[in-house]
Image 1 (tube, rainbow, N blue to C red):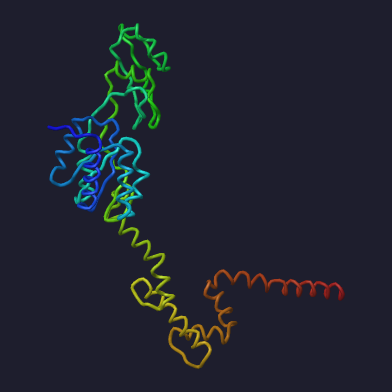
Image 2: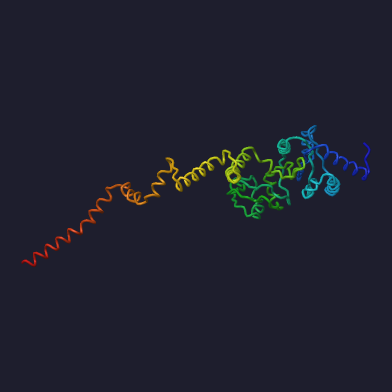
Length: 316
């Protein structure tokens, strides 16, 4: 195979990137940090015939993207995503299927110094199988240990590296000595171009149940008041329209001689509110009011008795 010079190779790369951007309706920017070459071959083989996987240098990709952006301005929105170790997957497949293919090829990896931890790294409690001469590694990380039957034993589960932190040299060496490979790596989706739209991969997590919930919430909070304001009857606004119509009919009945069954009680109350006020205690139960009435009637007899006593005193 004849090796092309640098200028020709760049020209062919630009043509290939432009060809894929015109041939496919979807483009996925993927991150390939800590991805092995064999892993990339497996992904490429799984997508063969359905998608094109293209890698390249970021500076060259940005220049080509700017040229493509002259005809398709939406591609310029991908420029902020061209950072670090990235690649492109051009396809017409369902994007959820593309994500499943990328996630299906995961490779377990050891913790290396300087690598940002994608997950918390926990060393479980128990015997390590290491002799007392290795105690210094555990002391450097402030791990609670004891010597049991000539072997170092960790007393409690300990998180040595938190998610998002860089793995230190001591942590990496200790994890390797314990044969702990805590990380799993696969191609990750960073950004998506889909028929002119640019959106993050979190959009793929939106299911039909989420969409239905959003629609129902919009119906309850937006459709009903909007339909009422425009006078458009629908299942959301009809109950409110009927209630408002009843209120209007009731107002007309109160202001005129027109009446109907539901308005008679309101008109009777407005005509004689005192009748309802006197009926209210009776409705509350007469048993509770009888003692109060008797107590109110009690003072007059007491006054009569005192008058009789006074008269008797005068005659005596």
